Length: 364
Image (cartoon, rainbow, N blue to C red):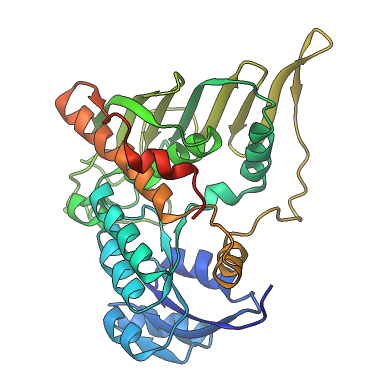
């Protein structure tokens, strides 16, 4: 890898920014911490002192205007993702943007246009693509070992996991949606990514808001405001028909009356199937005329792919990204139409020969 140090800035100083972005970028020799920004200057100051970052800002435009940065992480509420990412690109800065890329596909497409104009890179923070299980599964599937994939299931259901009533997560203006755009974007993306990101034909489904009255079903650590806004869905269930003939059904919930939480993907093919349930990976196939279940042993101490090293390497070498902005558009196109289908209580179809989807096989 090129040994040039990249000047790094963080926009948004919340818990995810610290836990995920700072704690990972700080360990990379090619990254120099330069500045941090948050509208809550106290949060920015706290992280700046903890991680020995010299420059602190409360305005991202000022930071991007004054500091000559090579890359930034955008870890703000969803409604600010497009605005900040586009401004950074226009200043010649590469962007690692947390998921979702924007609140809808229209805003996400504007990011892609700005990226193309700037010549810089945008990577979406789809961390589930970078787990050892996902990296292994992608290789396994791409080798054709499942045969023809005809159906998949994806879900992330919680018993008590509302991210705080009255926080920006439960406000449609700030988040763009509820559990579908929060949890759904992770496992819907991962399932479709493993399937090769096929072109969608139609989507249908339903949303529910059954727990907006309570704060007792909040996720641990999220207190919320009992009088705060809660105008998004806490459950989303749906079905996607794909133009290659395959299908995908999904379920996502912040709160539901179930026995225990579950995160899962199941993919069915003509030669075999795979399941990734609560982190446990299994392959289901047939050997010597006998059905077998295989549990791959992946060494947790050996990281097959590091999200942060990957982005730095891509910036320095020009290598393609595993989670480019175009993929963020793809998922948001589906989510937009899902919301439309749920609202109208009928399936919504995609345009024929949609160039946005046909271009996804290209390198970015």
